[in-house]
Amino acid sequence: MSSTYAVVNPATEQVVAEVEMADLARTDAAVEAAAAAAPAWRAVPPGERARLLRRFATLVEEATDELAELEVRNSGHTVGNARWEAGNVRDLLNYYSATPERLSGKQIPVAGGIDVTFHEPLGVVGIIVPWNFPMPIAAWGFAPALAAGNTVVLKPAELTPLTAIRLAELGREAGLAEGVFTVLPGEGPVVGDRFVTHPLVRKVCFTGSTAVGKRVLAGCAEQVKRCTLELGGKSANIVFADADLARAAASAPSAVFDNAGQDCCARSRLLVQESVLEEFLERLQTAVEAMVVADPAREDAEMGPLISARQRSRVQGYLDEVDVAFAGSAPDGPGFWVPPSVVLATGTDQRIWCEEVFGPVVAVLPFADEAEAVALANDSDYGLSGSIFTNDLGRALRVSRAVEAGNLSVNSHSSVRYWTPFGGYKQSGLGRELGPDAPHAFTEEKNVFFSDAS
Ligand code: NAD
Image 1 (cartoon, rainbow, N blue to C red):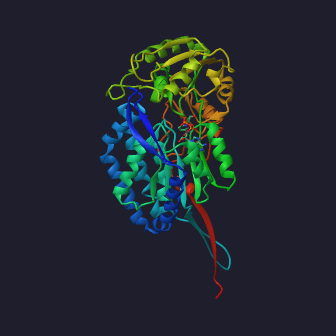
Image 2: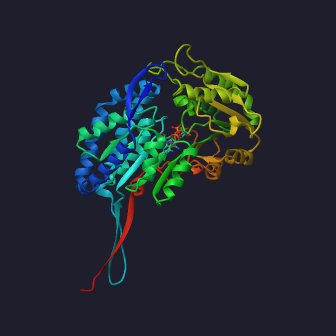
């Protein structure tokens, strides 16, 4: 029996859509349709597959405002961010549209014949998406997977299915045959779990919490199923005394409060060298208080609401345990609002310091020297991203090599570009997405030896 899910606008608490949730039978039918579509899709000539993906990108570009408006309404993303996210889907499709003609193997010297390798598509790829970045995370999976010749079944998060549903329609309009790219709104333990257990799904890309990711990995192990995990984070922003403090303080709020802190890369641990702590905090306070936290549809909004009442009470639970040193503003009235909040941590065993809050909260801790900064940054089960502010080139090199995280930036916070690899150390994930090598993660490398004996 299928059921429906009421999608809520987090800025108004109004229901904006009722979405039909796939049950097991519909999931199985979609996986079978994707498997049936796979041979024809992989046989599409490379140049034609590339053209279809570019056409898909063009339709996404033309629908930018519509997709952005849907995301503002469904996820409470600021309209500026939402337009960027739709543009990210377009860019991913264009970037990976160059894959089909370039997915070459090798010719390896051997005696008695020739040896060649092929990158064969896996078949059906299942993609499980969280609610925090519905469009980009979906496309990080489906664009390289499709480009490498796979068919895709994709499950958006229960809370945020609207843009994914629209993207699937645009894919069909672009000319993708039925079954090549299917979006299945549904519950994690039903649709997501079926991607893990269904033998025709040959790889699962999971982005979400570390707790669910571990279960997905264990489930995939049953069939030795390929699995990529992008999980949680508790990333450090390390500010050394020799840094440009004005720049470091001005950029620290957006590094953690963008998307209301619901970002796996949020720099939610702020490590500041103790000799400049006071000056840094003064500058940070000015920057935090200046943030425009407002109706996300407003062009000047810098931060919107949290995704749900549940997420707000989760975040509030962390804040209730500590003293907030200073905070920005948040609108009154309906919506799941929490002001951007700065907490002075008192120890590394505090929950606010070591657990992923996934809300607009940053914890600050001073450090004495470089060795302590690195030790504190690495004292985490996570290792997704991080930032290092210093004007000492040698220190930037040493610290960026020493911090155990997959994505670091020096004197900036930019860490996710579609053409550079992205993924986590430790419990932040397994495997890499994006960048030039991503299509290989959606293929099996096959080696064939041709004897020259006749
Ligand atoms: P979640 O783990 O609860 O859900 C993620 C997705 O998994 C959803 O689509 C959900 O329906 C599905 N799911 C739930 N139970 C499942 C099951 N038993 N089997 C298969 N699928 C199941 O996470 P969330 O609350 O939606 O997202 C927040 C988390 O995601 C945070 O911890 C955040 O750090 C992480 N995240 C990580 C990255 C990254 O790239 N590393 C990016 C975004 C979010």
